[in-house]
Image (tube, rainbow, N blue to C red):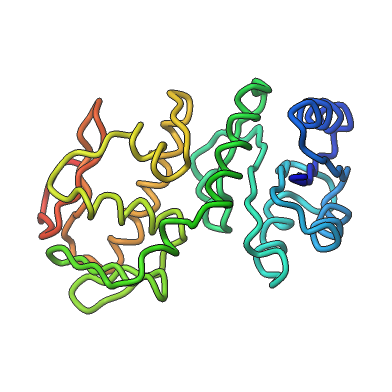
Length: 239
């Protein structure tokens, strides 16, 4: 049976999530603080972790960082629950390696959808793992062995999700890729409420590419539609 670890200092939220997950036939383990949650992650090795951000003593970011740094737990998918809806908070989570996030208050149906989609993604071969060969389009080279992007001899590391997004854009280079397609292909679900997830990741990817791009821009925003990769780059273009 699929096992899920819930880490939240609010006992009522813990119980609500536990009951609904068990009704969906998941086995659920709960922790009311970050230290116990991290200990249970190492002990139970769950298939997925639902992690709150704002907890006393040890916050969710610290717990997530410990999980990602531990060899036995580093690949466990994490959904972060947060009342912090600022862009920098989301970027901080994605920087650590959070797979998805849900802003409180949330609908239980939405949480169950995210859980199902993330478990499906992690149980299948991730696209980033399936990509074996170096892929080059224009100035951009995607290197799967090191999860790196190279532009004109300079490299920057990206996360597996960022890798998958860039790979999807490269496979469709020159054409617009809708936000719905990115969500479906990378996360395994489509939701109007989750478009912000794409925006956060795109901004994060652009920040990384800007460090090695020499001033060129490689991802164009098609407002109201999606995103397009411009492999040769442009010196000045609306994004």
